[in-house]
Length: 484
Ligand code: ADP
Ligand code: ASP
Ligand code: MG
Image (cartoon, rainbow, N blue to C red; front, side, top):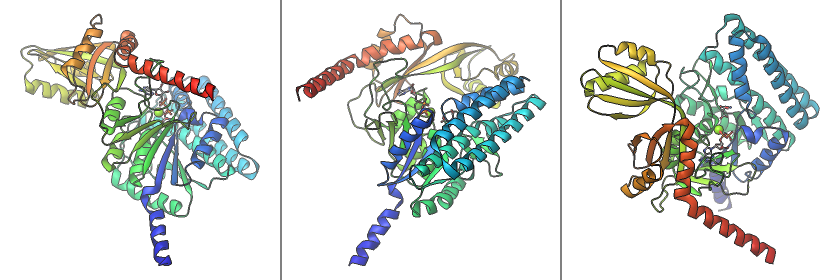
């Protein structure tokens, strides 16, 4: 009987469902103190089997990008200055965290990486070109460096960590700078490389954001892609939960940088969170929810600076009152107006969409009338070519510096909600008003310069009573504490 029970215990311990994937973003690993905090958070999960995914130290990816661009325009001096600054920052963080023989080992490994980065920079300067493929090779160093430092620091902290090269785990297509995982190969690599470590009681730690093609060429999953890495790993290992640790208390009713009184959302559905991420909420990479959704793995957004806060729980179903859950902004979009010479036939619209795709102009949201169509694009680079191809059939005009303001919430596509929204912003020049293809969003386009103000007006409309209620309950709690 005892043996039988032990067998069950063993089986349940090895069952994939006690794996928890913990992703720590740039600010969560920004310096030595932050990395120490993260080690404590990982320790608090030792009752499960953690797998850790880390981003580059905060702002490092931006600096690597700047360095590559400087080199490509021949400004090797700036590129080398940035390189030196990055080298010093990483060495200092490692010096603070890792000691003894491990320190020597880590410093040597960092030195080697910076030599390769230096070679890359010189190569970019020599050819005067910073191709997407080279960009991926360069930007990926941020995560390679941070994962080396964090793993050594965690080991010194007594955690049984095994550093894994994410290039060996995440297999992607060749769409450099925006690669998509090849799921079967990736899952096979994850099972082969991570499962034995987990079974041996180790904590695998890998860099987010990066992967490699079948031929081993480095790729990246798009900016902010470490969240996506965590979801890929979580899905591959059929994790019990995926935790996204960041610098805010969870998903908020709006970007707290825009609305300082934004409130934490306690629970939301996968679909709501995906919509929010897709429409610009930087807190989650837009692709993150899909793998979790497919396998029904709950995702938690948590604050590494305030680990006791419960954060936001994202689950399949979230039954609650129908209401606006959050307001977000997708910035830096352009609106393209296509005016047909005759009529905007469905066939012409189809051709326009196909042309945009061919010229790498991904588009969103289309509104069409009898003779024209308006589309939203993230980049206008391909538009001159599209305009040239459409000559004689339609004229093409575009306007930059637009922003899409979006209200998200399950089943909010109701006339009374839309009525409140458009009454509140009646003074604003809004266009391309849409209630989405889903029941989950209401959106409109404004000049980027007035986007934040529009969000604040709507936040006040939909959340002022919650803000007041939370302030009152906080005051009551404080009074209670004072009384005790
Ligand atoms: P990390 O480095 O941890 O990945 P990010 O900077 O990518 O963190 O994402 C966190 C940031 O997202 C927050 O600091 C906040 O400014 C921004 N943000 C935008 N919209 C929201 C929102 N609705 N809720 C929470 N944070 C948001
Ligand atoms: N370091 C990468 C970036 O800044 C990925 C991430 O942080 O998620 O885009
Ligand atoms: Mg992020």
